[in-house]
Image (cartoon, rainbow, N blue to C red):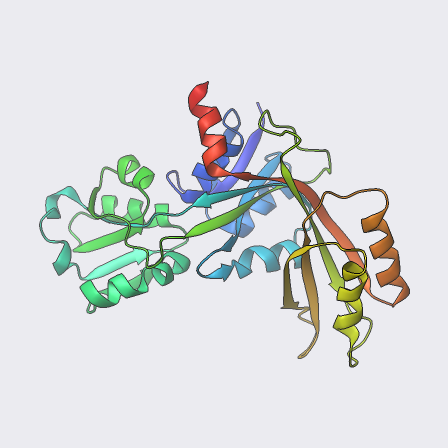
Amino acid sequence: MEKIAYLGPRGSFTEAAALALLPHAERIACRSIPDTMDAVAEDKVEQAIVPMENAIEGTVNITLDYFIHHQRMNMVAEIDSPIHQHLLIHPTRAEEWQGVKKVYSHPHAIAQCHQFLREYLPDAEISYVNSTAAAAKHVEDHPEENAAAIANDIAAEAYHLQIAQNTINDYDNNRTRFLLLRKDDNSFNHPVISENTTYKTTMMVSLASDFAGALHQVLAAFAWRKINLVKIESRPTKTGLGNYFFLIDVAMKQDDILIPSVTEELRALGCGVHVLGSYPCFQWEELSRVVHQK
């Protein structure tokens, strides 16, 4: 049985994404996002699933930076999942949630619920942990502490907590993109894949030098070929102030003509170009239906 590493402990949003994408794989919980990628590099698992981008808080920088600078591997699939954050408390404090003195969760989850915390728990101390599931586990393990966790309903069930307030995230369209990473670049096979499945190709581009119009030249290589870009983002190269590379998501599967020709044109301009993966993109809802039908 294949193994998949995810940000644990059990009950995290990342585990839910792993279950939807690979329901028959053995799920291995890791303490941090870098640990999940290290598990692949060290051959403890065949693949890892990591959060890459949230609709509210943007890119998960620790994922992207560790991937680029430390554990480069292949992006082989994407799953777009809804994120519903709840306020979880120990059952012994079922009627006392507004008197909570401390709230535990992942930094992104705290940020996603900023208005709720500001309005209902303005005096509560915020404590950051590695994952929402870790927050729920802490509350279960410390019933004497007047604390709450922000996490999902799966964590509430896993750690025997009560949902004091449902869906406390500030925006309804709260979703996260998770990417499946592997060492090999074999195509990802899944029963949901069809002729209607959408694909992305992710490229990393570094400019030859910083001159007027450099980025325009890069974008023009895609534009005149009518290649749609769904995202472009700059990240520091960590070699000095003002040095950046660009992550570009192309709305197409890697082919034999267009993407290779873009790559060659950019290299002719002196740019560094790396294709990080070309992969199918799924919605959590469509994959979960398949899981429940089996």
